[in-house]
Amino acid sequence: MLAVEGLTCRFGTKAAVDNANYTIAPGSFVGVIGRSGAGKSTMLRMINRLAEPTSGRIVFDGLDVTALKGRELRKWRARSAMIFQQFNLVGRLDVLTNVLMGRLAGMPQWRSLTQMWPEQDRAMAMSALEQFDMAQYASQRADQLSGGQQQRVAIARALVQQPDIILADEPIASLDPRNTRIVMDALLRINKHFGITVMCNLHSLDLARTYCDRLIGMSAGRVVFDGVPAQLTDYIARELYDLEADEVMGSAPAHAPNDGRLPEYGTAAVA
Image (cartoon, rainbow, N blue to C red; front, side, top):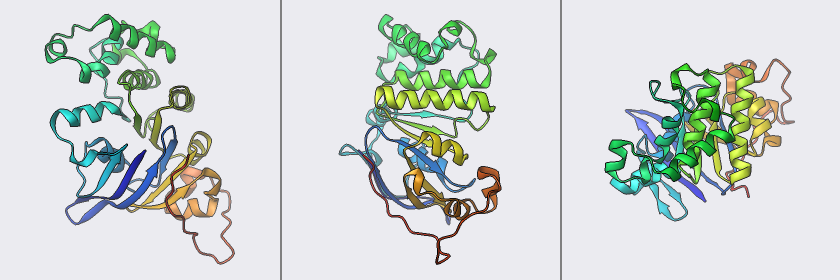
């Protein structure tokens, strides 16, 4: 169970994330939605501790993530694998080596410096590539792959970390529609086949509704919606996205509640 308790991140006087509270049950596929600048990326980066909270706590199965330092923090970052919009691969290295980078946290320092990968790790990396139909590119330089192929390599690298949770920060933002589906299918396979919790920042409501079993909506740093996709009506989505609404959901007319007000939703764990 992941619990976010009063989580806040300020940059000067601006709150990128403001008093976020929610819990996520193991094995969930959670979409974090909202307009650009809503705080989605900062939220995921705080969970991985790439961004430091100003206040509040992150607790995972009783472990206070916000208090971790040194080796224990490195272990947590292995357990909470990040997938980035820009892939973060080493272009001059081959695909297999890029995937093996996901095993560094569990290696002695001398092995990590010499990159003498154990055969067990090499087999694990090849198996991960096979999962996403990328094994044939194992010896090819990463920078020779298409964007969609590079993102699948990044997902394979995350998988070999053997994480408890995968944090995907706009993983399909720079991809065409075909590769978008391939990458989202890969994340869904990890979630359903391995039971790994996935939190994924998404701009497209169609994708969020299709792939996620729960949505967390953010606006101006605050969590303003938390529920299943069926609860996210067009009216709520338009309130959430404001001027970006037509871009993410098309131009269909919104149906407001009878009293004309945006319903309020509390946070809840979804089993």
